[in-house]
Length: 306
Length: 307
Image (cartoon, each protein chain N blue to C red):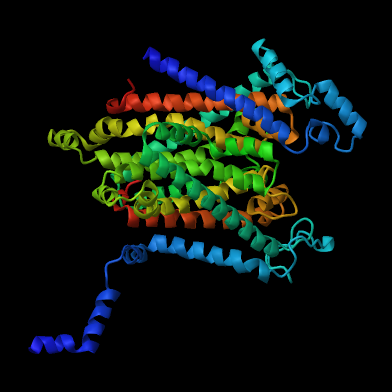
């Protein structure tokens, strides 16, 4: 009877349940624990979070309008009075342009990756789930696009759409979805043979429900891990395309466009190009290192290799 | 093998036909045209533009233009550049050669640097050598090549005055673009060599060789490296395809008159005939490179060899 009194003690019981609940095994919690022990990945995460915040609030805090020209104050060096990072050849405040440039680059990176992730996941899921001719058609298309260099397709697509950020987003999204489709297809190929899928089928679930409720949660992890690499790829691609005049058009400042505009002043005013360049490098390094960390957490087999 | 070749050739022809139609249409649907500022003076009058379009046949429906174009191509006539009237055959010869010189130099540089460093990093795993090499690799993959180009130009051309900042086609002018084009490939190859070496360093046959008393350097260079290089070399085909993409950027920055430079220029200037021929040329090149990659992969790994 003594045991029962313990069970009847409602407060004790509830606190025990709460403790168990708080320490329950969870994939997210494990991942967070692993990630927090990986110093490099944590550094990457800090950089990425920092630039995300800058992209969100930065332009609102900018001291000047990004397009405002003061020709008498042109080409001021960094740390000049009133212009922390100096001014460009038209006397526009470099810091204000940089803040907006970071927002544009981040938005292009996230936007294209969101498009690519969604399309890639759907296509990969269908190809891996239905196999047969569906797979042959879809995968043939995926392999074709996957085999082509991003910049080549982007240049041709932008040739059709016309230079500008819209063209860049469509072009980069159009190419990068193939990468997600390949990964998801491979995962689904293996997963659909698992018992839980057979069990769902035995319960009379339809294809759509199996794909969305049972397969999707299992593939979304690796797709998200790839996401951080693809954001980096998209940021570099946008910068490169803007640099050769196919991306952001003046006076809009994307990081690549700023490097391009500054490239004519390298000898005496190199900061016009070097500062946005350093920002891109930091951002891309942060994303890549974070991606490596996430991969180690979600796919420990690859740890230390590659 | 014969049926494989036939299938593959058919596939390539199909892709090329589709791409030629798509590119032909795409270029013409974009805002602006050769007469809208691409080739003609942007301020020229409406009459001059219409006269130009009529003379060049650009006022006809796109499908009519396509079949006329196809007729010329079948007869071996690639046409002339709208921008300066140069026959495209001539452009093709010089620009393809320039691109090949640049691409092969870059490929050579990346292997000469990456393979020894990758081996060293694997053998000295987790020492400062390894960490330095891998840190360099991460940096090499993170630095956008056009920015690397600017930085190298800043130091070696503007500050030190050792190398020209752009142009073609003397060896000194080749150095900077080739280095920039090689950068990412070097980083990727180095990481691959290292991981591939690590996979084989503890194989049974390696232990047997050591037990036999073979000097360590011979074990590494003659036996482990030979196995480890298979995936690295079979990736060359894919690397060739990537190089095409980077070459578009690098050639444009350094004004290196290659295929990529001319393609970007002709797309921006709406020089249709040039853009059409050069984009198809690059597509053929990438398809062939990918095909080569498939074959090389099969040769390196007999388990997946194509039937």
